[in-house]
Length: 241
Image 1 (cartoon, rainbow, N blue to C red):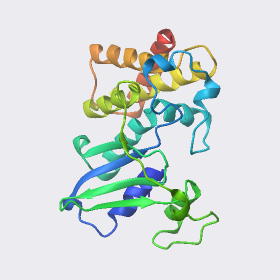
Image 2 (image 1 turned 45 degrees about the vertical axis):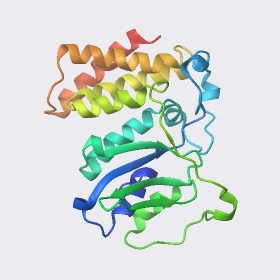
Image 3 (image 1 turned 180 degrees about the vertical axis):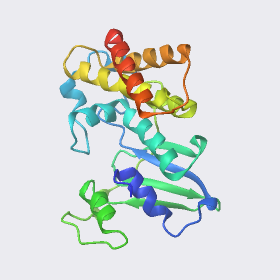
Image 4 (image 1 turned 30 degrees about the vertical axis):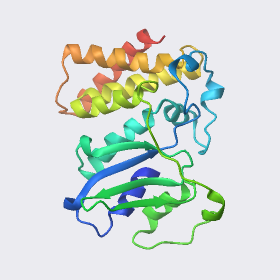
């Protein structure tokens, strides 16, 4: 059972539906604390600024991933594997209010959206209670106070981590493992004020490029992935900027 809010939402939208009639998965993103900014606005971003998420209260690592949109890239890869959906049928849309947790589009043009309060206890509880729905200790979403729902495309020119992750997922093999390891090192360096905010994507891309030059491998064992994870981390430490 998916626990992340986006995948839990997609799962619930798919209940009772035929996968043959699904035309697209829409993974929603809040846009993070820097939505609407350009690369030139992000040159001097501090960890404190990046940790200030507008709608979710999360740990440091996922908060930074949310601000760079790397978390959406990881979620696209996860959706590909969880729901057996090709990458060209998985889209990301920015939904700043975080009221819509994800959507499923069907071949007849209908779209199912999962809405709810921004509280991770809801998807976690549903994974435990399925097929039942237990009463949750959260305030329900008040549509009379919600106001409006906004949608916008993700700015992949400014937030390049999303496209890097999509590329890694599309290539497959060992590239997603390398990408993930490099991102963890780059984010840790940024949080420790040893690397820059824009340097996160630059570091990840440099390590991915190095791995692709050497040759992406077919995944064959955990030992292989552990070795590549270690290589990617060491390479990333040399690429922090």
